Amino acid sequence: REVLVFNCDEGIDSQSMGRIFVGLVKCGAWGCFDEFNRLLPDQLSEISQQIQLIQFALKARQPQVELLGVTVKVDSNAGIFVTMNPAGKGYGGRSKLPDNLKALFRAIAMSAPDNELIAEVMMYSEGFTHAK
Image (cartoon, rainbow, N blue to C red):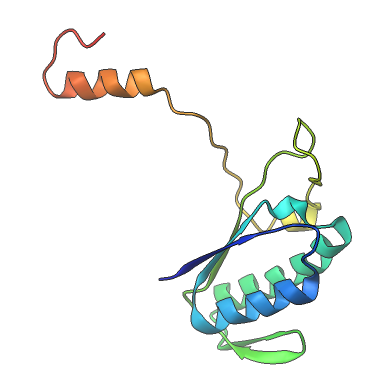
């Protein structure tokens, strides 16, 4: 399965995103939209409606969906994922997602790994008695 990564910025509009979504849905690829919350707030609302249509079609196993006024055959392998940096906190140009858009995705948080603890556990699992 192909994963296509798109870096989002203020220059991407809902028509551009719609064309990307049509391609993803047709070929069954996964789309990862990096820094999704850099899109303009007014664009996020339109884009969320497009995502909602796609997710409903995938969940209901519909054979087709209408996007940008065109009926598109749905490949059930298609998927849409987004990454975001927090709004504020030193990350300029980010906006908070509207609630209707937040509801379409499952949030996860990432943190830096504790490399020392990982190495210690690996050494203990290999039989070392003094891994510290």
